[in-house]
Amino acid sequence: MDSIFLPFLWALNGVLAVIYILAENLLTVGLLGVLIWMLLSLKPFANAYYAERIKVFLLVTAVASLVMSVIAPSPAPFFLLIMPLFAMSSLYMGLSRTNPADIYWNYAQTALIYNGAIVLFMFLESNLGQTSGTSGAMYLLQGQNYIGLLGGIAMYGIPVFFMASVAKEYLAHKPQQKPEDMLTTIRDARKPRMRQ
Picture 1 (tube, rainbow, N blue to C red):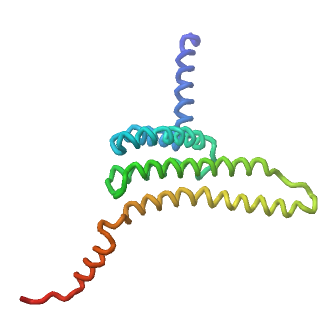
Picture 2: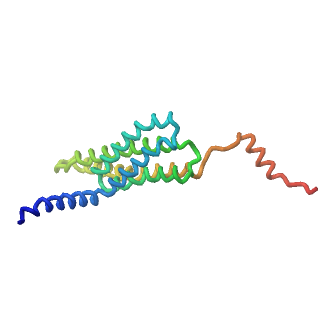
Picture 3: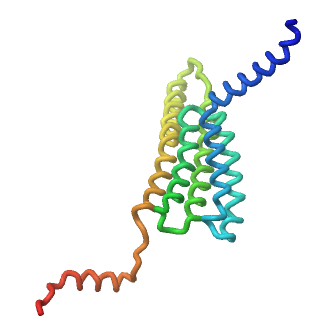
């Protein structure tokens, strides 16, 4: 009788294992959804010329971001999810006053730089092992601390810089007039109006 229920228990065990892995990598699953959303919405926002050129970079960025989201240390998966989510929200809210393809380019460039910084930081962290008791050990230890400090700043600084650049697109935009016409408009506005 027990052998009859054994396949169902195996299936239940497999389902529970998949649920556990998904819950453990919830940020990666969210990142996958946001990146698919970003790739599918490329054509409506960017014209055909930009969409074909950006698509390759976005695919490379998506694969690199997904891999880094799985293997990177703690703050990186969160920021890898927030950066494309921030970019897509700016496009869908219609707050961008420039070419929408620029936001895709900025995201692809910044995410690739961030992924490269994660790889470099993880490589240096794993390959700079414990020092021995030699006289130069103190200097090597100080160098390790310095590299750790730079990696920590990069883990938080690059995504914050990206979000600030997207926010700049919200708030700042190119002037709508020539500088000479703008000065004339300002001067005319300052002149007292004559009563008639």
